Image (cartoon, rainbow, N blue to C red; front, side, top):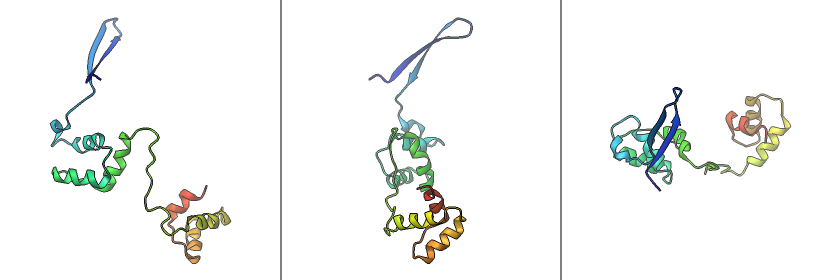
Length: 133
């Protein structure tokens, strides 16, 4: 595989244009620039968020977990599913969804209150996401 691709086209004046497009770069050349952290995310999709943060910190770049989480998906292959490893830790998701179905037109806050009364802790964002389940 070559590091460059040749791009050819004819411009609006009928002239043949040729440009080389680099497909490989050395991210070390961008250390100290605002885009460095983004390039680290792009080049290291195999690392966890914590590992990316640890590396960035060792390079003197401070970013938060949410910053990495919001940008890392840009460089993942299509079809990648990022799952929350803490999902359904109490095992009450199915019961919560049943309760949500009992109150299809109730407000989110009211449904959260009903869930809480039944011993199921869920926030209104969770209820909103799972209301159509």
